Length: 553
Image (cartoon, rainbow, N blue to C red; front, side, top):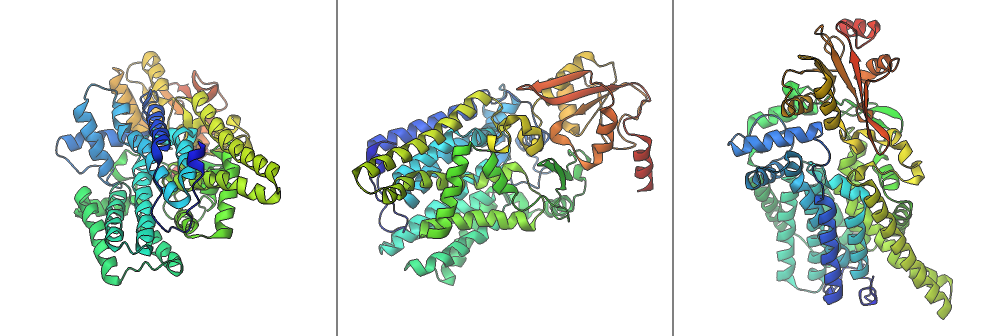
């Protein structure tokens, strides 16, 4: 970063007014936001819908008809409302791009919000470097390019924490009216975050952060003020997400959390493949994905340089525990505590805490020169320290940019060399990284080659139905890869096997299919994204033992 951006004293104590950007830093930040938006919007429809995204598309179209029920009510209204507005405004564009537009826009704006929070916590240099990492990280780009609520949640929770930090600083400066304004803005941002995704545990992070900050500040919030701020957040939440008041919504949510097959058309994912092992992945189960799931994601889904800086920044924050560090530590701890108590985990959940890790990485790159200067006294040591810090920052940004460019438009399919590189993609977290990429193209092949009224067995029922209709093959019959349900119609059956959808319920079928060669393989970056098998009429999908077990159940 420019010298003018790096000279500011690190304000980790959260006192005084936030330093101004200055013309040079403001222009740099604007350029980073524009670059981030380009990466997120460019070829946004290059990948076909994932199963989850199909339901967003359908729900957004129902919203335009004034229908707010149906499936997908386990998620709040905000993203679907925004998608509906985009569909209404640009009806002829790609359905995939239209549905993903709100998340991609939120991802680009998160670059700006991360810079604001970073500047308040650690100064302009850290804010700009964190913004650069957020803008150019291949994982940030890839996960912002899917139609899921996590991008919106991340944006508004970053803004909420920025308001919290500014309120603390204003109160310590006896700028009481300003502190109250920041508090209200933070409550509104929190309500909007929860109208984006029901990650209500983040609400507990705020009083915990306040209590941990209390010994370092004169900022005080009496019970009456907490009640008023909570009421503000609730009012914003209900204004943006009023369907939560419907009894049918609560009935659906309870059945969804119990793992019931609500609506009968969801992709079944009671388990998930992570680090080569299948774990339970319902809300509450005994064999859950391990609690360190998100720490592994932070380590292996960014470049090795970024991961090293993240680890350094996290260790420094734990040791130093300045007010700025406490906010980030509570933020990370909230997600880890949630992941320890609730079994269901997906890579996209990391999006809401990603700015915290990238802020710590940027902070480490900025404080590194100071630490080295202490170790190497004298002018030569200071010069070497500055060069080391600049090199670390440039290496992190350059490595993330290189990965983002070389993996486009499939930026999620990056895996760090620390985990064995891209060749181990199918070992780490293929469900979330593929997110059904390649399925649309595989279905295109099936539509061109399948017999009339053929059956298509998969774990993405609505995706098959949607694309079969779009490809002019509404005659194709979709069925699940389940015993006594898949390939049971005495007609040719095409089975779609995806490395991202290997579950306990289909393991026997996949092992059975492996004895034969697929009739088609859809590849992405040389890897098998979808294998297509053809079974003749009456040919079993599962071995006989699986049918017997299903009958016994």
